[in-house]
Structure formats: C-alpha cells, structure tokens
Length: 388
Ligand code: SF4
Image: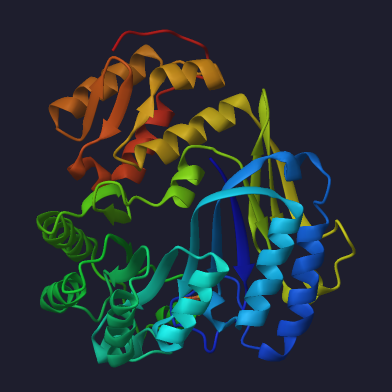
C-alpha cells in the first residue's frame, strides 16, 4: 500500500522537546504553498504518478494551521497528478486549532483520520513542553471530534517526562480514555541536542528521566491501554483491533512512500535495491529550489541493507518479520548463531517465533532496539541457512 506524505513546516511556537523541521515565520506560508504545489506537479506523467497511492498523511509542523483554501490547493494538486485510491487520509491537528467548523472543512476535503497532538492534560507539563495549547483546549478538541462524528482519530501522549510522576501519567491516560480513542501514539520524551530541553541539559539545569522510571511509565501505559482494549502493535502505537495506522504501517513494511515539503523523506523499492531521498531541511533553500532540485540527500540501498532494515522495523511491531519474506524479497537468511540467540531469547520470553516468523513479546518490545542490535550483530554476512 503506497503512501504520500506532505510536510507542513509551520508552528505557532517551538515546543521545548521538538527536533522536527519547522519554522514560526508564518509570512512564508504563501511562497511555501506555491513551491509545494510546484513540487507535487513535478511528478506529473512520471512512473511515480502511475502508482496507485492509498494513503495520504499531512504532518509537520502543524498542518492544522492551513486554511480551507490552502488545503484545497494541496489536495487538488495531489489528485491532478497522482492516481489515488485513498483508504486513509490523516492530518495532524493541534488542539488549539480545532473547531467543529474546521473538522467539517477538513472532512469535506477528504481527511478521514485526525491525529491530535494532545501530549498531556496537565497544565504544568504542557508548560514545561512549551505546547501552544492548554489542557482545556485538549479536552474541548477531543470532545468536538466525538460530537462531529469524525470517522477516525488518534491522539498523542508523552511519557517519560522528567517532570512527570506515575500518578500524573495515570491521570493523563484515564483522561484520554474517557474519550475512547480508537488509536493512541505514546512517545517517550527524548531530549535532543539543539532543542530548548537539550540546551537546559547542556547547562546542567535538567536531567532526563531515569531509564527505570521510563520503563515503569511504559508498563503502566501498556497495562492501562490494554485494559481499555488498545493493544500495542508497535513500540509507540496502540489501537483497538482494525484501527491500526495504515500509513505508518507502510513505512515498517517497506512499502513505497513519497514525501513533499522541506525535510520530507521518500522511499521507492525496486527489484534488487531501493532509492531513498530526503528533501532540503531548510525552508529558504526549499523555496529557492528549481524544479526537481528539492532534494539534499539521496542513497541507493542494497538488498542486505534493506533486509537488516526490514528486520529492524518489523521487530518493532507485534506483527514481527517473516523469514520467508526475508529470504524471497531480500535473499537474507538467518545464520545458525542468530537462531541460537533467538532460542535463548524465547526462553527469556523476549522473543516469540514459529518456523516462519520472529516477533518481540510485549516485554521484548520494551527493549526492542537492544534486541535488534544483538540479533543483527550475530549475522556474519554470509548466506547461511539454519533451522528454527
Ligand atoms: S507543534 Fe509539533 S512540530 Fe511544532 S514545535 Fe510542537 S512538536 Fe514540533
């Protein structure tokens, strides 16, 4: 299932933890939209315009800053250029932009899944994260989503915040569950260099949450969401059955995706390799791009690299990875040493496997990145066939 991604690089203010690409210079919106439409139209009558694209994701930045006219401009360009049969059209929204009227507008434009950036309902945590919205606005936005009968939605929560104790997290989760969301993305707060929090860390004014505390947050989250029928299907994602995100699942399964706007990534698989590229992460440079020169980095990935990446992405999901897919699509075969290690992890209940599939258990997902590194490090690079 192929997916289109559009990055809207504007925000009202900078959240203290954010390292996505965005600008607060709203006066660049008009030139940005003109360039974005130019970029989309540059794919007219190409091989990629012939693919049937089934998901569309508007992320950012803050896509909910877009007016109806701006949104229509983007959607018109997408439908003019590409063959589309969208099963899922997601748009990220910040609670302070949400009104019933706005939800009806984006729904009429074709959005059928809202991604609400709640993060927390605690005023002090929202202030610490320098979010533009208040707790009341988050409640109202979720309530409005329900009242307008929006087709589907997901909400973001942040845990592992150094200012957050277990009680605060429990409160955030139970407030969120009052709205019976079909999907929740929960991210552990990481302190990235270059962000406000990163600077505070450098100055010694802040310490990240202890790993053990973050693990406790994660266990609480998993248990409470599980009790509410939202099961963890990826390290950061929980859904009631059938409401898993299609667009993000494309990324994990190595389906094609094509990104537009500054810092957007694209990935197009071919028979024995794949192409990946990234757009310029600088609005000014993006705006001055000549037609076809929006990219700043491009790479060709060989089958072995792709296989390792597929293992890495798959092991972060409850679906896991199929060994026959690894062998047929990537000519990658697990080595005997890897099978031995998998058997050991099965005994420790970190990994489950059957003859064709390896998957992290719920506990294994907690340390998925560590398990993946361990598994990959046991491959000699030679093609060896072992038995599960
Ligand atoms: S609204 Fe989103 S993209 Fe914008 S600064 Fe905050 S976290 Fe980053």
